[in-house]
Image 1 (spheres, rainbow, N blue to C red):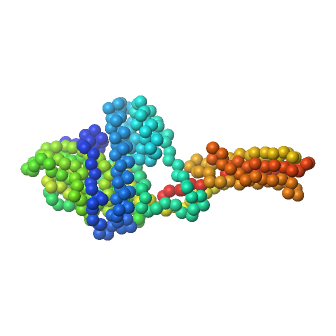
Image 2 (image 1 turned 90 degrees about the vertical axis):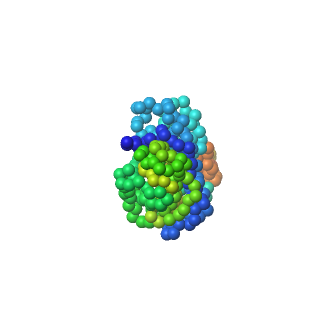
Image 3 (image 1 turned 60 degrees about the horizontal axis):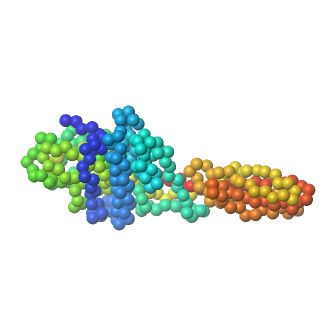
Length: 349
């Protein structure tokens, strides 16, 4: 019996998380050990993924076969993982799936700086950076051998596993190994018997331990669950442990990378140029910032002979444009003035 990669969206079991915050520090855990900061960032990732998944389930029954394309579930999750809370609320309240998809696609999250002029922003222990991928199967033990009971078996989120595909490719540096992964796990117990109801499957970073279940199962079941799991950031691996033999299928929907401090990138807009007549005043509006940039200030420029003009300090208007106010005290000459907006953004990874 084959199981489609998207079955987990339909046959979703009660949503639960592996208790990675209770894990001991993994050996060779790389740049990010399983510290309190890691646990907080992982909890944030799990919470956001759970919200996105809940929104998908709300539209599950309304989706037509050609409503937005066959991959609408993963697309909507990926969009919501980058959306702000207001956008998520609007998507959830949409009357139709198509309206929800349009709202999600139109949403953007602009990086805003609260410290103009800073040399670097970001922390390596703040929220993880979600990187979506097309749904990809990374493990299917039915193509090899069942997972033996009470044994820990490790697999790679970046490489090939039994019955799976190398979805991400090999990173060029250990620093690029992801910190967590968004996955859908299907457990197939067809033909496997001899154990009691209430068996469990745990997933946790390779080298660590876990005392919590990712999903519970009984003989003969085919069930699925989705969530965010932690990884060993030194090698991109996770471990699976069950108390009964099991066939496990894992589909990958995205990974979470540790954030990197990035230099603040700033630009000046082109100058808006005008002429000011003798003994006149003029307010000049500078151009708006490019898409993705935020205004942090601006500049006012002017001429005139014998200091015959004054330039008042500019201000930002409601549209984040720099305003310059000029006054001429020259009784006979016209001179040129200009205004520009100073714009900055955090480039990201």
